[in-house]
Image (cartoon, helix red, strand yellow):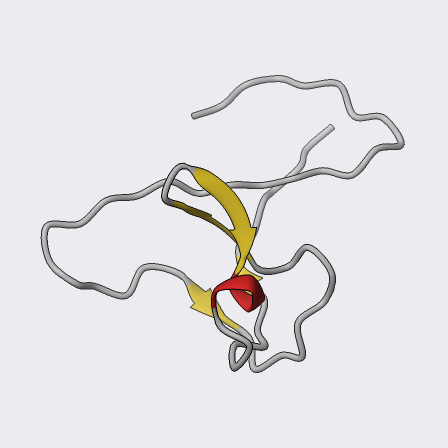
Amino acid sequence: MTRDIDLTDQDIWVAVQFSHIDQQATLGCDPGPAVEDGDWILNGGGWQTLRGLSAEVNINWNIRAILTP
């Protein structure tokens, strides 16, 4: 999906939505350590960090966005 947006001095958030019939790997992650706001997931209708789901998780999602002028 392509949509023009105005960029300001605020943070830019990128999200990915997907669904599967079976258990499959979709997103990659780095080995960590987690940085603030690098591990959000929509879980049961609300947003939370993976660290909030499991203290053993210490990663960041690998999601790339391309911005063009």
